[in-house]
Length: 528
Image (cartoon, rainbow, N blue to C red):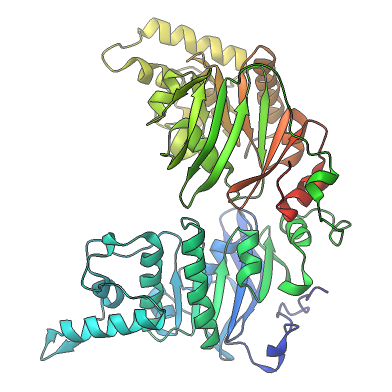
């Protein structure tokens, strides 16, 4: 049974034992617009004392904007924020904190060079006779951490401790200002399983003490491990509010992505096996073979084989580990475990330069920050990777650069006034074609394409994917990552389904459709 909004935009009472309690914090009919974009439309949310309420939704659903409204970063265009039934309108994060609303962000925003105690009380140092009372500060810091069952040397620099302890310090700072509402924005994204367990033990203790906790995450297992209720957002709107008990994992996935709910109550036991999930087997030595490749807090050990002339698709929800896998395979991030072999020879990628030298190219999903250099010309962007491989002392002659750029502009159908036009003046689709040309210029044997068609028009998508498919037919190995399930299923020879930073199934072409992919994600089972 879903809990829906009334016509006024107010959230319904939760179907739980807390129904008789009043919410400590309530949002009604929140709207927030930016030039050309309506980020939030009539959104409602209620947080009750003594509960963990999880906010879920895909990228762009409006979660971050809603948190910024709650914490005073944005002032909503319409709607009300009520604290204990009284309207509030925080104009800054400091004002929100003074009202009892504290936030711990994904990236711990503390000072690693200062001590643990200084970080907890920064800006609020206890004083005596006009001086900082260091003894009192250390005692109070130790007492606060002990409440969370954490015992560390509070005089030591914060940088000495792992990220999980730093998260606890951030939480201690939040509750030290008499917070009644604690907002945790993706706090587990860089934690391993043991550290997540530690964090959840702390949250359960705070919940038992009556704190209202808003938990933002992409991880399904964590949601069901800690949550009392879930609010799902999609496209800037509140899709619904549910108790954990009434919402299956498959139904939650469907609601997040807007898929039809006809299979929401289906039995998903052994979903992996029921959909023909036997892994594909092809002869010959793989071009790339990864075994046990992983990174603490980012990706559980992963096995991947990829042959030349094959397209392997990675699919899963945002935060499932797809991009993390791509970055480890390219050496953009350093793996903690496992090994990579290229053409049967083990290779340790210490940096992207090593991967490029081995014949691997990588088109990042972050086109603006990790791909295109907007101020440089189309020509300069195309030759960039090839020039980097050769080194600064072996400059590519200008005439060769120009010939190469013209060749790829024509082959890929890049619409530009000139090869000297700054790439920032091109459309998103044409920028993506230029980035593809950059890696083709290095004559790679394998391409990693992370969301190569995100944010571009239908025709440009088709042109790019047709070109990539043709490269694959000519013998190039392609690792293809996309949030669009039809695209992954249509082009991939095999598909690996990711969930919560690990692979939960590997399937041959035709073994899955959109519904069964969602079932595998929801079941979280690994095919044998």
